[in-house]
Length: 578
Image 1 (cartoon, helix red, strand yellow):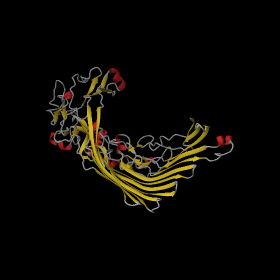
Image 2: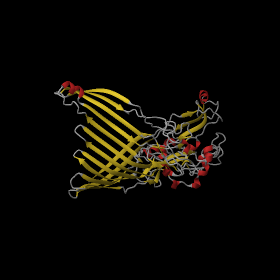
Image 3: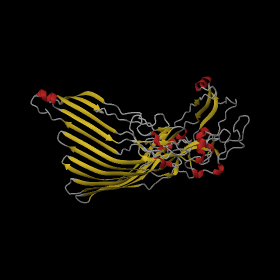
Image 4: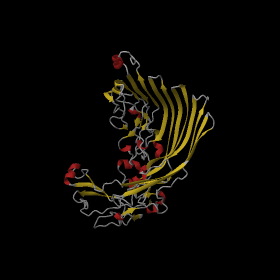
């Protein structure tokens, strides 16, 4: 039995461009570089505060475990662990987070004619707040002294330590008890056939990047931006000649869901039989599985009505998405949530044998299926954003990015016995003592996720859309067409989300052999010195192995093979040991 207490600290400046950034789009001359030479920018932005944070998390754990030999044939492994892991927090409470429960629709933001939030009534002398009769409700100022007096729209924004907001921004799950159970049972009593199994519950937490990503949120940090300024003077508009006044910007939020942040957990289990075929050969057959719950993703919760997506895609919605979003006054509210599920099931066969004193062999085969919501088609990275925020993580459920249905591999080392003990020293030295080894890998292809290019690819809100499946999926498996590209079409309704499943197709598999030939020449038996000559080959049989495939509907090479693994590689080397 035992316990632990650990304090983790991360001290880091936030990323941001405090030097400012100009963009040029050719709106004056038709050529962006010409606009640059004239010193006339279409936009300028600058981070107002290069803030920093002191992010801590505290971990406490207690455990007890015991191995109990019930009798000569049965052994049990019993254990229980408790993890107390409140969420990471910023030591000085310099964090802002959006809480839907704090948002008051009666104080929804009011916008000026430029799409900014009204900071006051229209000022004819400065041109500030065009079209505004008064200041928008829901305004407040920053606790950061660097931004004293700067107005922010704070309807729904919570700060740790105020209004009951936890210092880690989310509620803590204290009941994280993880039992462990394992057993080994000698089926025959001879020690040659053993049944083994186990179950365990393992907890984890998001280790702080979610808090770091939320570091630039209002009201502790902000960015200022102006349109139509010159390189020499960003304070004056080149269109009106008036002094630019920093507007109340429509802020984007990277937040954490206070009530949807249970600890990620995996329930892991296995059962299998190990049998000794001989004194030096063991065969193992096992079923291995796990169920993962409360896995993390990001989802935009500030969505416009789905009926507005066609106008957003076409660019015809007056005022843009900020004027029709659910929480007026904010842009994208990308909320971190621990909500997704995943699972793995596999049959694993493993043969390990010292066939003879000269030959060692290891071979294994796995038949498996791994399902998860690899968010956004990103290949399995953590803290990913869901593809379809209206449906959430379930839109991305499909074969894992690393899922292979069949996976076989074998490796061997063979010391060739010929001429090893020949009486002729020259023959023994030159022709004897050769060793050959190799690794063979034969496996199914990885999943392929088909997406859309063009305006419907993001569906007006920055998502990752997929096509509809309108034909039968077939695999010509040629360079020009790995799969049949005509089976997929863009959704006929603008703004609709495609019905094709995530990772619905399969890419090329592999059949790869790597072989090596070694020869040791003894230089001095008394000193143990020798010279090793090695010839190593990769993809020995020069078998063409396709790799990447173009997956974007609408691209010119859709369905075509775009890359392959390397052709045969040979390398010759020598090594002297003394």
